[in-house]
Length: 291
Image (cartoon, rainbow, N blue to C red; front, side):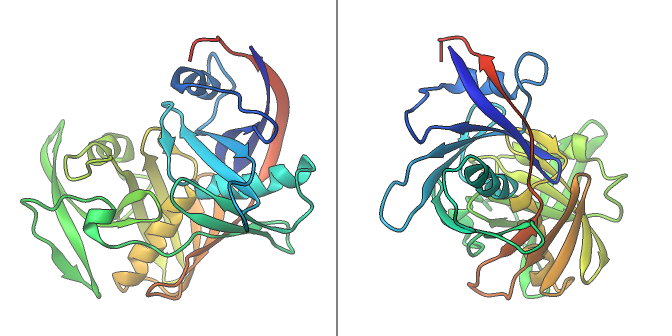
């Protein structure tokens, strides 16, 4: 089977975007993995699918699959690309659209500077909802929140990292580091991602505080590995930094792929993320029929 696709990127986080507004492509995990494969497919961190409105007040359904073929709840950088794609393809002429993900309703808005702002919804702190299993772990209070010392068995022996845990519609664990460039993201990232305390695995964020209005961030994403940028990871890091008393209400997040601006007023208010989104190229690819 041959399918058309659009390759896009938002702050270096790259995507294959598929249009299922007229008919389902019926793809399975193996086909999503092939699309994401950087040697045998197109290459992407995630596969984004545009589907028709699932109900009143919703413009589109927004479906996300990771590079490992599994469906996931949320992708902030992908949401910005989603808006640019549906406008460029003539699927809408709106500057603001509402989309449904697996577990959230998102509002996407084109900004005057051609960046896109996404209402990411409110962060979730209830441990069972993240989900996070605290059995055998003892929290430490910092600011008005808690960090959880989590032991990891590394190649150099047992190491403990202090994690702030929350959900942005998908699970995140954020640790504060002195320097993101020297942090052992590739070593510690998969150990945090697959730790038993996270029954659905977790996105591992490594945050360096530059000032109260700027951080540097690297994220080892669940099911994708380290990416150049992670929108929900940037939101989670800023929320964690605010609750830990380290950051102000609006923060520029410098990633390897570019700059994101995150704002959160605290409490149950929504996190607002602003950043770039660009089309790279369009094409067609032949996929095996077997899903």
